[in-house]
Image (tube, rainbow, N blue to C red; front, side, top):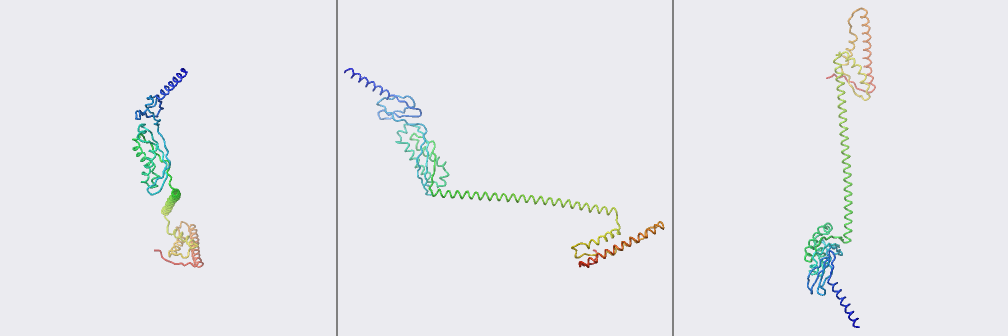
Length: 342
């Protein structure tokens, strides 16, 4: 009986000693920290690795995570400057830098960060209208981060980033914004269509202008070449006339040949017979009736015969021209007049 009691006592002492040793040893994981109180007063913070404490005297508090943490807060109603209620959902990135301050400076640092984020968000968004709130997320994020980092510094926290995950305006505002967006898209489409049509018309006008310029250039070149050709032709005729030196008799004969052609025009209702026609007929008659130089009796006889025949032919040609003129005037009601040339 005595053996069994002593054995039990030994076992109890051994268990107590083992339990005491286990309570004296604390292993802290990496990026973690644990605060130690000795007789109810803060003593130290256990670092990652193997640590020893005094059992039953030192009290070790739960582990505090030193890694960066991400907390998503539920959407909070915020009133903008233009009295519209929007739901804003935020995400906070923070890290515990001082385990002692996080444990003793604030009772619940996570709840404190959430409430501070909500109040700061309402202050920042309350000074903006809806349109600015929707388009100024970076500004809101930077202002929130500055205020939170300054306020949470004494709590042993460091706010790395604050992001606005969503901004939900009321349903009526969403419908109005969708209508406005559709109107803006329709406006841009109409503007683009008008710009395209305008550009098309401008290009068409430019093409017509260039075509007109090219046609004008071609017409001008053709007229210049035609005028140059006519000038050369007139010059050739003029030079030929001067080289051959025609007498008035030849010119009068050519003039008589052109008279029948004057009366053949279908649109001629009035034409003039110059007074020089009589002199022209006389010149032609004299040209064929004048005696040629006589070299022998035979040549004189033949020359006279030829002159007589030529004079008869010229007289017949003149008479035919006069008859043609008279018949054309009587048939078509033409008016003949005799007027001297100036």
